[in-house]
Length: 270
Ligand code: DGL
Image 1 (cartoon, rainbow, N blue to C red):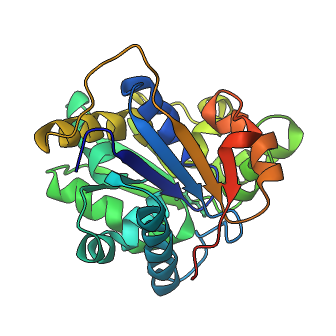
Image 2 (cartoon, rainbow, N blue to C red):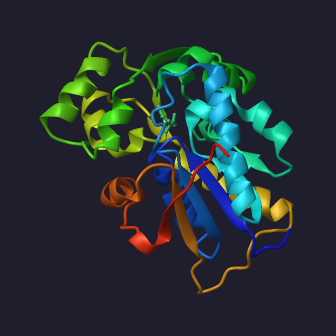
């Protein structure tokens, strides 16, 4: 596998673009390919077996179309239930969201209580709690599923009265904790509203930067990290539904527009 191979990134929809944005920032000369399963988003209310099936289809579609040197699962819902199946079926370094986010807690040795905001599937998997306990965290852990956060952000509704009401619906009355983990890659787009609704003593943690630094380390240890250059890497985008909506909304998540020539609709179920 050469250093010019591509980093594959996938999510159920557009949320994983918040992770891709951090990857572009940390590793600007790497080539990336992103897959958003926009025809089947959201995943968060589905059963673990369906999520595993979708995850394998997405990963195989990306691996079939590209020379991948690593795969980033930019979806907490998939990372909560499908990592063993993905690692068993693909011979690639695969990075999920949960371990890098939990590792980042070492920056907050004083943290005694944590709230996890995530999808229903992530909350009921207990994956964050397990990873936090394994990492030695002995404090209080609260988890809250916020299922409407994904559909509203996929519609580009991240501020204004609708978004404010949805945020209040889930967050009013939650206990104040030291850290809030944004356990879904769609949620960073709601950060200004979340910061008004919850005021964690030490701060919010979301996966983007943490995943990018674990990815950089992983590529370096596999000898596939691209040497820094002034030439930006190539970025391509696949979606499973019409590219039209992706082109309109992706900027909210990625922080910059995606030229329509870079977006292609594909099928992942062949
Ligand atoms: N962005 C995803 C996550 O991090 C998926 C949300 C969904 O499809 O429900 O969990």
